[in-house]
Amino acid sequence: MAPWRHPVYVRPVYALLYWAVQDLHPDWAQRLMNTPQYSRPKKAVLRGLTRLLLQSVRDGKIKEVYQAHARAAATPAAPALSAVAAARTSKASKARANGAAVGS
Image (cartoon, rainbow, N blue to C red; front, side, top):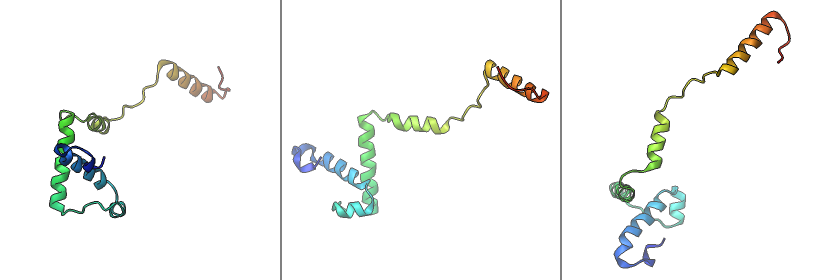
């Protein structure tokens, strides 16, 4: 994915993506890989451009992000007992109340 291996007209895009991938690494890995260290404002601009580029590729719809938001917003439903499970539960509780062994 090295930018210098691509045609001149696409090198800026590949250089941005190459930097974005390296920017995800921890600081020690960035130092090890000699990742360019930019100022905070420039990093914010580059991260914004990366996000804009990735969203434009998928028409602004990142499926995984929307799915994650939907999972986080969903409230877990209370488990409902089925008719069979409810009958077994009531049968077992009645048997325990009468002191009989719980069986089939």
